[in-house]
Length: 260
Ligand code: COA
Image: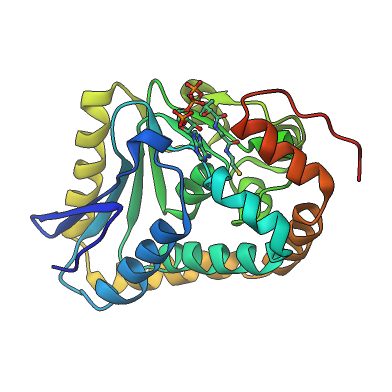
């Protein structure tokens, strides 16, 4: 089995259980974790036709993924490589969205920013009752850059997507379920069982039909404009406001934006 620094990976009954394991940072996605997700979905398990599916969750009971790692972001603002970073992140999440077997996100706490985007790139989402969802990037002076401006629209429609993206407000699990952002909202002990039940049902179906269904449903959304998101992210990430927003987060204070 391949070795990962920030992913715990177990295989049982043809189901891959993947846990993002940086609990001290609420499982925030640093570049190492992004590289490992790319390796897992793009190479290590990309040809495993015997798999039924993947169950993706976060370590501990507080967080699925609290976003991209803001502490690493400070360097991005300085280097002017925001657009490139967004494009690379989008590519990792495409590997998940286009994976040949269903990937279910078990959202066991905060799914914010890149965490919400990661959950949305999965084929289905099951929220535990304590989960919270949001795209709080505007609090930092940036925008979602890993597909959030496209997939949030797809899942909950433009009006609510704009509200969440412009306010940075969080949804609780019941609201997320009501809006169709998640497939189910359940108590923690039932959420995993539900995901396994769905995968068990899928395991009895024709594997080629499963793979082709994923491709065909994804094809409906092929006109989404991820490039527009990457360049918009790049512009926002190049501002003084973003440097201020990221510094304010690290220093645990409110940001003082100047619109520059
Ligand atoms: N990147 C890096 N570190 C993060 C992080 C992120 N996205 N989210 C949380 N952490 C770290 C915190 O810095 C803190 O580390 P510290 O103990 O070294 O100070 C630790 O995780 C615990 O977070 P903390 O903020 O103390 O917990 P909380 O319960 O008060 O708040 C959140 C939880 C999720 C509301 C808050 O951490 C938060 O707003 N995180 C950022 C969410 C975000 O903006 N994501 C989008 C990024 S583009």
